[in-house]
Image: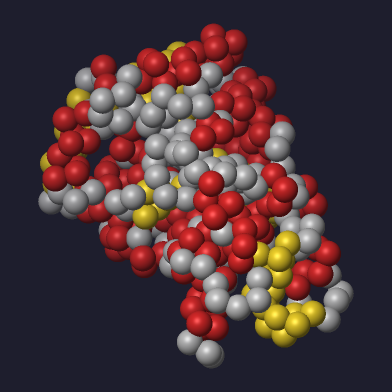
Length: 359
Ligand code: SF4
């Protein structure tokens, strides 16, 4: 059993199904079980804006569950304070999906609150998230203006009442998010890293990476995801606290990763959005995969740009001796390059900083 399963491409429903198949999720299920699926529908905006979970991913999960004989399925979410979950279910395509697959939709804002003590905090949780036999968390990997990263750990904020969401903000978010993850423990996480926004939870600047990730440890997944978008795990306070609370461990060189369809990484031409456009002048791209290109855009956003010749990236540089700085294994022939296929944004950002100081 690997720690992280990754699948690349744009056939999101099939990709989610394949990941569950590869990780043999069926072995953990039995037909009498109730299963909850928790997407990120913080706002009522379609997934291509970079804020919400693509319904095609949840469709793949529903198909897999149905083929495993699971009939009792709920899709549960509570949008952020001020937005209507019912509206989000409709606009984001979940109302139609639930009808098609016979799944129930639960607005956790209407749920009964249940108290749990966690690391010195008395937390209020929504009953529906606690009452299912098997909970599948389906967050979006994206930036956040207050916590820098939102992914598996923070997505559980949709499983607390609105009054508790407000209280979390008065407590500074990090500690209560970490504490929440000690008392609500999803069984499985499938991450939407298709086109998460770089900066804002509500989307608007999607950067396509066209990948899904599956795993069981939210700290491991979030620490890996943080590096994919340019942060070190310790940069993200709620991640550090969750690790200290024993929720899970950081990803490291021992982390076992299984990648499906790595040839399927779509071309960087697919990367779009204002943020990607802003950094294009720093990039010399020739046949780059979008996951690689997105990592470079994340790194440039973190460092604020690059002074020097545009950074080389893409399969067009493979096997060529090229002057300058490259990103990804394809640019191994450059004077200097960052390893990886794709490389981590945190490592690209660190190298850009070193070059800035002439190291
Ligand atoms: S290193 Fe090359 S093959 Fe690998 S992700 Fe980047 S562009 Fe694609």
